[in-house]
Length: 109
Image (cartoon, rainbow, N blue to C red; front, side):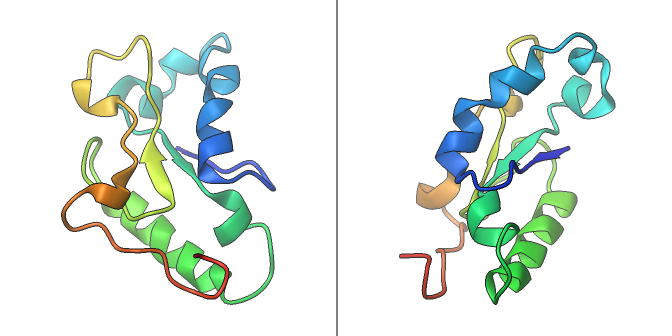
């Protein structure tokens, strides 16, 4: 499951994930049970037309291939799930992890 609120960067998306993950029944969803919930920088990769859309597609492909807890590219992070028994489900901002890709493009600093 990918959380990408329109106009939210990664930090803001992570800040509001509890509004989604605490809703009744969320913990019963397969992605929540396995720790497979990811937050992304929707503002940079999905909400605006331009070359960032291609980066967004690459980001989404990496998320689909990842297993919970695997390193993710910059712009994505695992969502911490309070009731998860999966320790890999904790948030991981992967900019500093080995193998993570740096953000690229004119608006990616």
